[in-house]
Image 1 (cartoon, rainbow, N blue to C red):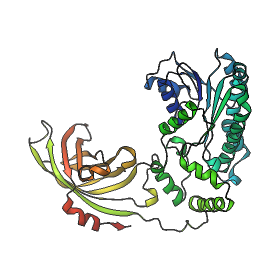
Image 2 (cartoon, rainbow, N blue to C red; image 1 turned 60 degrees about the vertical axis):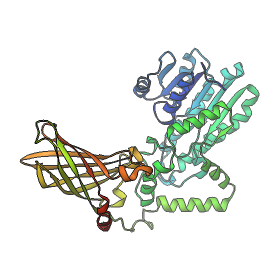
Image 3 (tube, helix red, strand yellow; image 1 turned 90 degrees about the vertical axis):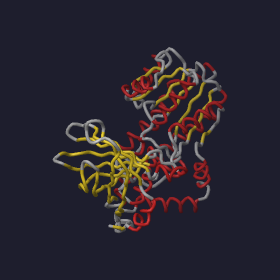
Image 4 (cartoon, one colour; image 1 turned 90 degrees about the horizontal axis):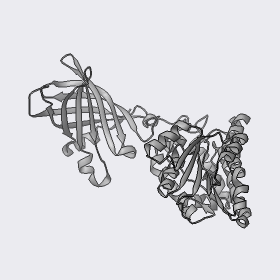
Length: 426
């Protein structure tokens, strides 16, 4: 299938998989009709990616309103070649805590929304004897994790509808593709409850075992181009699908998952220790004052820092779990400015975010307050001896924001034994 000049509707297009699909299909020459509740985000996407507004049209539309969907569909002067039902709402809670209002909201977005969009264009495609619907379900249609019951049930329902529609629509020239995304590293999981050690660990590790929105979009487009009946996205979904035919295995996996993710409330994880740790690190090197801020030339610099989280469960940043953020204290010596001045700040291990470690601390000297930010950059497995030991720093005066000096400090390998030996639980 070629997408050149095809008319494609994408729901939930303002972010995540939807925005990735929009960018990639635009580059393949498609005319796009982007649908989302948030028109401002759609316009931001179009402007940010410099998309031609003659080929990309944004629409604020509530897909949970049958009346709004039908009126919008009637207002379009085209019959779409493809409708991608991507919009979805996540939800996490035990079934006993899921209210009827919760069910209704989930059903409206994840089930009725795709149905309304399908019914709005199905007869038009049928008369033309061509067209495609792409329905995005979830790998949880196979895995059905406790604590995600309502979400899994509804995603299973839309998957069953979509797969059956494929067989009933072939005779009309209409193709239906059912998509089962695996874990996707987007904002979809930002509101997941992380009140057990297992859940916190799972969210912390998300960047390492999940897929990017771009890679999922590539798989969906591949399925569209080849007119696949089902696009499983990730091999692990085949495992989940096969597991459904083995009740004992399925039950065991579900039991273990429930134990790992949900058993903190009165369960075995509740009284497990949650220790933190501390470790002592020394960075030594040289700095150079900017013109007019001190004597010219390269001068000695060293900071000795003690850092580490007070609790391991609190180490991942709650806003972005790809950042491991911990408090930092110690002293800094900057020749020509201070000697063993007390420092206080944070250290961020950002391997999963942008391959950096960031040291951020403040201190006082000569009646003034200073702010230091140091970065270890481009940390990759093959360049650790350099990237993990070299820190590039900038020192500013807090009150004025002026840069006072720039520096390069190093973690010296001869200090490795004392560094490792300083590790202790707290």
